[in-house]
Image 1 (cartoon, helix red, strand yellow):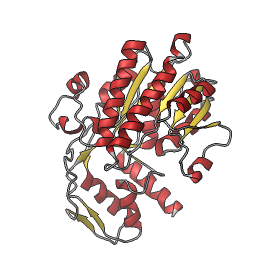
Image 2: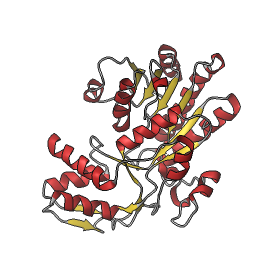
Image 3: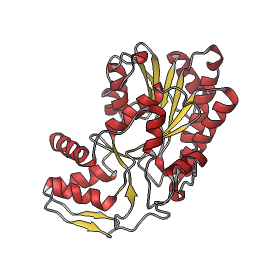
Length: 324
């Protein structure tokens, strides 16, 4: 639920044209916030054009500290949601690029916001991490409460490692400079409008086309969470009291295998093509179990995911049928 305290708040959203960013921006506008959209200079023009016409667009490269500082000065934000990142859907992202954008860009942003902090102008900074920061350290039999207490971060690819670095800088800026930073870690997000190369839209597209779907054996257990639940979780992280310095999982708290999800897609679409589990190998270092500590996030913010997997898949399939 969106609190009235967001009304007239100045909010900078980086990565505003992304899968999560587009939905969050519209929800913030509906809440009466004054939203500024952070956009990368090389962003696809069609995605930029899809942003609501009434919001200012600030074009800047996160790797350019001067440009980041200028954008923050122009927006004068009371709240920042930092979603922009390199490699979100590309596990093979160049490590140097991931470090420069995801860690270095976050550092540039925090430095710019630090200059505003003594004036009391920044109420909350939400940094978007990823469940893959937990990596191989998360076991199916491990206590979620204990994991949250000790962090247990163990990234297995460059994207996740760069997000761990961004988290560490955020934690340091909270401790050393008092910045009101909260990190959110979305789990396996899906829904309409997701990039085509990710699991759910890729499977749905081939199912609707009657084509075969090559996949790994699909035994990976993932916490699939619908995109609108994730944006609601971000809104909760913006508004919850007493969570500065903390990290919050955004997921359902329930995991199911990748193969089960693809099987449900095949059933819901009456697919004529074949599922081909085992046609592809697992990625090197593949994480086999990732589940959000949903109870802890609920205790701290009052937020829980509302959309069940079956309903979420139906919504996604229906929208993809419409969109063609």
